[in-house]
Image 1 (cartoon, helix red, strand yellow):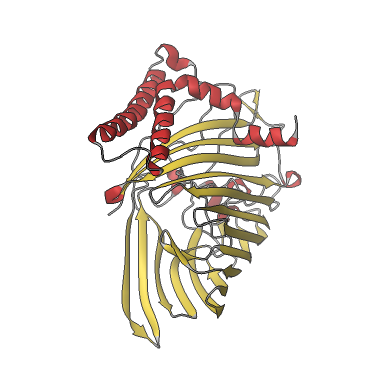
Image 2 (cartoon, rainbow, N blue to C red; image 1 turned 30 degrees about the vertical axis):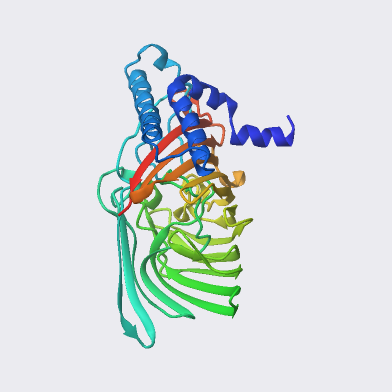
Length: 437
């Protein structure tokens, strides 16, 4: 098999797509017709204000969701053709927050997950000027619960901070995203590739930023942060007997932006942005087998627009003991040897805005811990790919469709109930409706 064929097989796995087509023939037909309808409308080939066209759109959307739901219900009841599933299920199905598949034991496990945990509430306020700087603060919460791994309903607050900023400086403190590799893939999955190549989480942090403007079309951004070594979004295995070693972790990033600024979603961005970043710190395992692990990572990220409608985003990294930064497949150290786990990973995405209300993303990522740091049964490679179509309608309504492929490999040699642990994969058909106000 040629290198190109291997890449195409990874991005579009035929062994998973064909069973999906057999499972959801009506849903897929509706999705294809809806896609063609949207493309035709975006080029003014049809009049979307025609009541007949509006009814047709509603019919296709309802057919997509209803036929898929009926098929999944039929599978859960073991009705007829609903038993032809050839996919396996995520270990954390229902959480949709960490990319991780359980070991394969030879049995297909279909799952369905319907929830509103991605619903969010956000608030930003501005205060008075202090020492010539604008004061303010923001908070945003989702409904995944305090710990992502426990899969409980509740408030999940990844952002809650105060700030002082001017044209040249910004100081912020509170719950903030990591400085290192801050970009994320535009996937409908809340995981956004975490544990599969997307480095970075959030934590309590003090941050300083400095903006150096060479001219209107060139800016150098310097960022630094002192943060909590442990992210509060994880409890359970990843934090068992783990604590800080008396020092905060230090993160830094330097980004060069070229071209005029433009509004891209909630942020102001330039068409060409490249950055390098890193972190250093320590983390301690207490108890009878006390150990201190050096935490470090180096990374690079970029966002490049080819035109005002399409471009690429990407990140790469290399580090050690960074499971708390959603790397090494959420592993910090080997529990059998007490050795820190090193890893290499990254992700890339191509994005295109077909028009002002229609966009698509195609992306993939990989997280590949060093085999020399692993023992039998531990996850040894995690990878994902996805393609989606997102439609922004009038009034803040957003409808999204996505197909994702996930693969988790395990270091060979371990057994579960007398069976060897095998690699696992899943094909996920995702849909999301979102109303913004």
